Length: 209
Image (cartoon, rainbow, N blue to C red; front, side):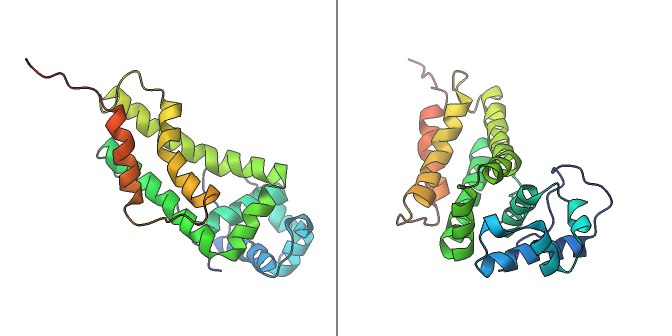
């Protein structure tokens, strides 16, 4: 499997010394190689990763505090990169965010390795917590900020609960991609979800009598 972006994101924890992209790429690809060979997460030791990547354990520990943090970066690097938002209007930003979720759903379906990795993550509380803190929570924060700006500039009603609104946008895509693996994820689904939900969130325009 080709890593979409083999570099850990810059918003991750600070590490001990300047990074070598080639070394980090070798480590991340070493982990993916072991996963492709069917090595369970529980048996994915730092020592084994170091042997596979051809580096010393100290090299790994200078960049990652432990297996959980390393594993999260591997999964994140194997996913599509986070999108850049156009910033033109609420609808455009939400469509881009949901389209990114749709693409991730398609990738998880087509990749036996990623499907297996996510299943293992959910049985490893420390890894799942690290993934949630380092990947899911920041993505949710971006969506909430988009909605907050929209509320402030009048694109949605002032009384809208932003947490609930975010769930209303993201929920349908997650249901289709995670809970209903047989459901279609067609092109245009992001636009359909956004337009349907926005219809109920926009301010009511009074009409002159």
